[in-house]
Amino acid sequence: MSIAISAVVNPSRLLLAAIGGMCVGIAFAASMVGLSKVGELSFYPRCVMAGLCALTAFLGFFQAFWKRKTFRIDISGIGQIRLMEYNGVADSSRQREWPNGEDNGELVQLAAGSTIWPYLLLLRLEAEGRRTVVLPILPDCVGADNFRALSVACRWIAAHNIRAEGKIV
Image 1 (cartoon, helix red, strand yellow):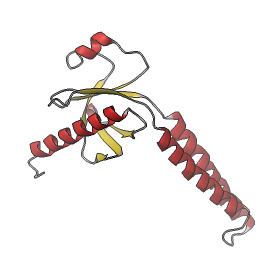
Image 2 (tube, one colour; image 1 turned 90 degrees about the vertical axis):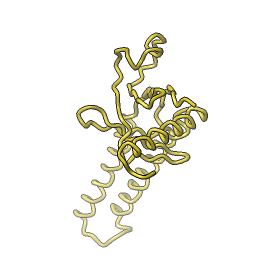
Image 3 (spheres, one colour; image 1 turned 120 degrees about the vertical axis):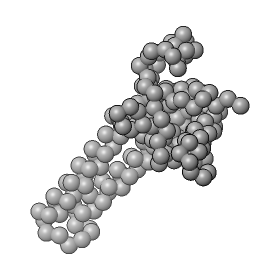
Image 4 (cartoon, helix red, strand yellow; image 1 turned 90 degrees about the horizontal axis):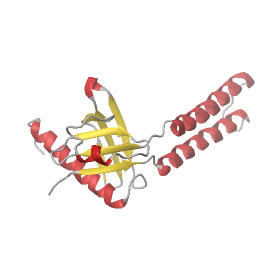
């Protein structure tokens, strides 16, 4: 069985909705503090606390919205992972020879601390120079078949990384 897969990972709408829900909750807490429905603070500390909560909610949501990127992840049959930011244009000649070809992607390794659950892949991918990219993959990011294939490939890579380090699986 080959674990080779190539998938385009779109930003998750479910993750954005969850972050949006948390930010709405923080904004609601800010309004409750600002209207003095919660706590017994004087006017100025109450306004500062409400303003900071509202600012945190606003910046948190828009940071999550602006940092959404689409990635292309290629996993070879031997477990090499290449990650590149996807701009919507695929070069078919580069897809055939990506392990040896030069392209915008970078070779990364699956780092310890990656989470592989049935409905969530939270991949910590470490590039050269110890730069780490955290790539959240939910089922709405890729098709069902690609999600399953990515999950199997990442489990295979993680198991082989553990064996290579001499740990018991």
